[in-house]
Length: 204
Ligand code: MLT
Image 1: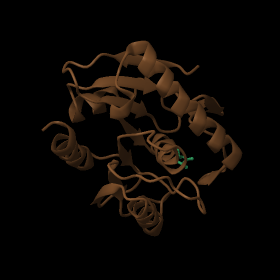
Image 2: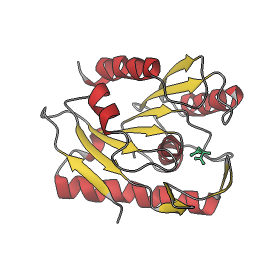
Image 3: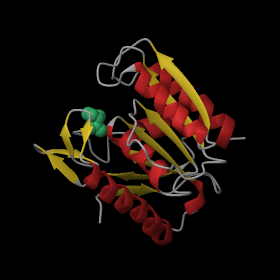
Image 4: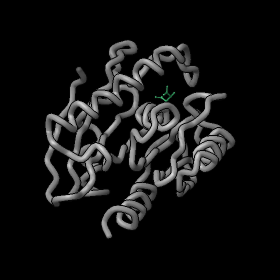
């Protein structure tokens, strides 16, 4: 079980957005972001099940940027299954799920794509890291990914974002990258770009 909120979409057939907050956030954090990017979509916004000094997260870490791999795998499976359960309960199309994640939430969204086949139809990853190295990523043909990154992100070196993009491309995902002159903070400019990307792929 995961704490969450669900809102039905205003448009029939529109995707369902799965919103995944950053460290210390909750299921309400990204609602206005979803409203900006895809006002017609259904929304399943989830709170991470792990607490770090009282701050919700989607998986444990050993230190900043150092993930607890076992917990990452466990939590990734838990979230993937949770989304499938909720698709049945709320009757949304499991094959039309687009994740929107920021930071820790983007990392678990990336981890879903690295570990579970067809877990996401698309993903908007704001300031994501490489979730895991040395794994065979399932085929991501027809999976669409938008990556928003900061050129001066103190948490995520430029090369790590490039590695993430390469990993996803090698698995046949269609990746759009957008770089801002900034740090780890999410900025308006990349949200606007994500909206353009969403409209192109899902709002035709
Ligand atoms: C993580 O642990 O997922 C990353 O360090 C990003 C964050 O601080 O949440």
